Length: 351
Image 1 (cartoon, helix red, strand yellow):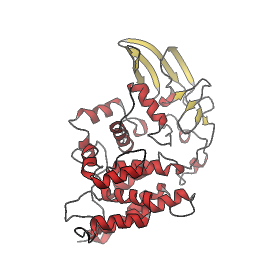
Image 2 (cartoon, helix red, strand yellow):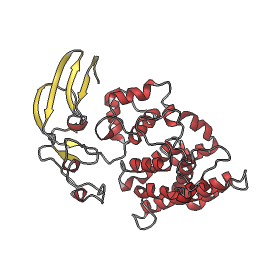
Image 3 (cartoon, one colour):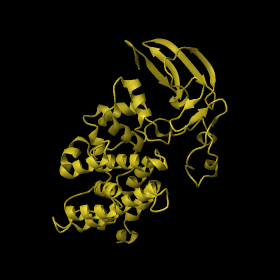
Image 4 (cartoon, helix red, strand yellow):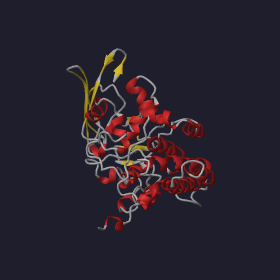
């Protein structure tokens, strides 16, 4: 962290809380916390408004977790969560509760668009520049793949590992595996989709769809997503050269959806492209885009036709659910389970 011409080093504890600020070997300030975040001891000046679990503290003493405010003195949020994170856990129905009542082990996710203005301001505070699409690309990777910190958060050593190799794209295109990651395949794709969805609220379907297309389809991030889809249709190789789609593999996929004839071992990128078309343009348009790309107008590809058909249908269903306030279709938080329907039947593996 730089303030003027002075470089400060911010040190965190196992929860990511700011515990110490130093310049060289000099301790500028230190802070310790009770379990739920109230101050236990403090000395000097931390020179940052980041405190418990790395969140911003305002003049009222409340902590801003992007989606809502948290009171560390009371140990609860001052407004309820907009969703029940996991309906299978009774404790999650207390929507004011912080970290499931276990603040020494867990911290609470923001549950808000991870590329929004709050993140951009935070990025600027740390790096003294505006984030680029490359920074957004890296940010999204860190949400899908667990780091070595608490709750899978990324530490300095994780970012160093990511950037120290010759090209971070190696982690994206499957050349290099991230430590502890699932083996590439259908289940990993579904888990990653669910993990991404957990950062968005139900009214952020468009933001989710843009991030989904960027990660899994290599579709450029643009203010106007229609422009991005057109650019992708005109010259997809240029987009993939800059930001390769994440390699998720084909293990566990029903092979009737996998184009092995052209050595396409990453069906998730085809799914993501047609999902985006269905989301933005509707099922009919997505269907004809799919058919024009892989039907009788080109070299007929039955596997891609099948997968693209369902992808466009899923995209349009998520869009309709969003636009009709849940009356039709299904929400993107259910998308991971819809993707699991492409699973290879068990009898495939019977000898």
